[in-house]
Length: 105
View 1 (cartoon, rainbow, N blue to C red):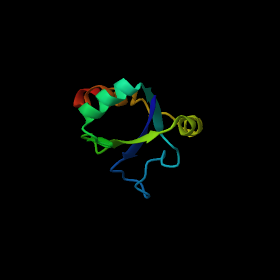
View 2: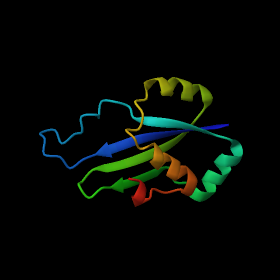
View 3: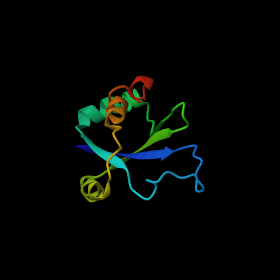
View 4: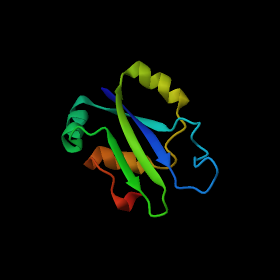
């Protein structure tokens, strides 16, 4: 089994004083467990990428970084994660075709 940690990275072109999103103090991400066979398929379609991103027309930006972790790390990290703000389908798309499609975001 392989454990993949997708960390959500976000930013916005904002008009506030800090130019920061209010969620910066949280740890957003999701862990996906893949069989060795599915992981090998993913490596082929992702071409070894470890970062994906998309910028919306309103200036909002999402990005996902990928880290391969072991089972114990997955267990510990999962306790701290605050989810991916509804972008679960984006992770599924990355896993299935290796990229983010505009239609999903």
